[in-house]
Length: 437
Ligand code: UGA
Image (cartoon, rainbow, N blue to C red; front, side, top):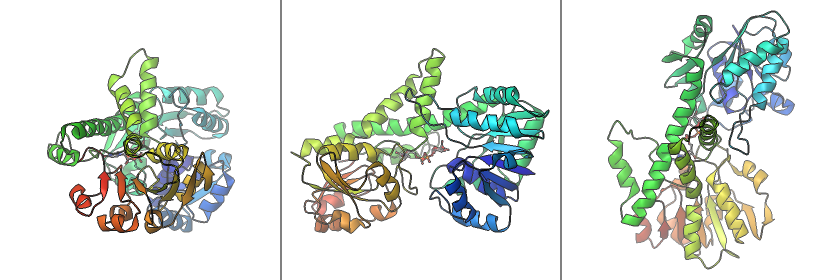
């Protein structure tokens, strides 16, 4: 079985590598030559635990190939997985131009019957259009079908999530397509839920938006906890024992970021509106998240006369721990506000520095200044105020004593609820977090 994968981002690359790991002959295609060259040498363009090791292992045993030559990759493939991006358009809809470009290439070069499998998150009904589009442009007399196979991996645990997924969703319109996808996934030994294409597309949005709703709900309750004197961590703990609610995704904080929840909540809202329906729950979730992201800065603004000329320690830039990704990270909104307010920022992130530099170059900016440091100590030393944006283990491990001793003023705004409020108080740290006292 020959498998081709279009796109080598989080979805495409991880899928390609995991298929190769299961013994398939896999060719990953990307338009970026530099990236392809690096991947051929076993270097992953993204930080993801365990990914490079598997790339190198499968490169070496000849099951994994990287190329810019899509003709070679698609021509005689049995299955072509599409994992290219579907970024957000200014109106909140999904940009399908990358999917369209790959579909056209496939139509023009396939010389053998094949199954095109859309892994990218796409609005309901897109797979139908992709199939029609490919048929419209087919050059050779072959049969091409399209199936939906949404991806549920989370960044930071991508390889693990793929190899040990809770379930595989396959959306097909024919028994042949269903049988082929089931066969491809057989070596993974995971539960498979087989539905029609449109339902598969909807499952992906329904899952992501449900999780996003769960977070916004907890953030909403956390804000109320602050007003009424309750503690959100205790509330969440109490809720978590109810199996109908579950223990995960109950962490209140500075709002969700990343390339998925912000995009997929807006895309579903847009899809509903397009069909004349107002998805009130999801719209509320988007609204709660957008104000939650800068809640800490707003709190700090109430306390400070100015940020100008102050050393501001920023701990964590990535949208969550375990990744170098900053897309839609709440840190970005806060850094913009802090810089505009004249702060001298000293930022630390164990993985996200390079990507952060592309958004906030080092040096004077907008009235303030941006400085990157390679240790927590350098960030905290002499700082007037500290913001915590990402729950990295080394940031979590900072003790109240360290805040007290290293900072000029031990004033900490924690967007991840990482430290014990009583202990911080006991050590003389002025500490603000989300939904706690
Ligand atoms: C998310 C989903 O969890 C995956 O199942 C899905 O496949 C993926 O989107 C996708 O569509 O590709 P991801 O964006 O990598 O994965 O990260 P999550 O771990 O879900 O976190 C998303 C955001 O929510 C982060 O900013 C995180 O800090 C925040 N979050 C998460 C909270 O604020 N509280 C929580 O309790 C959990």
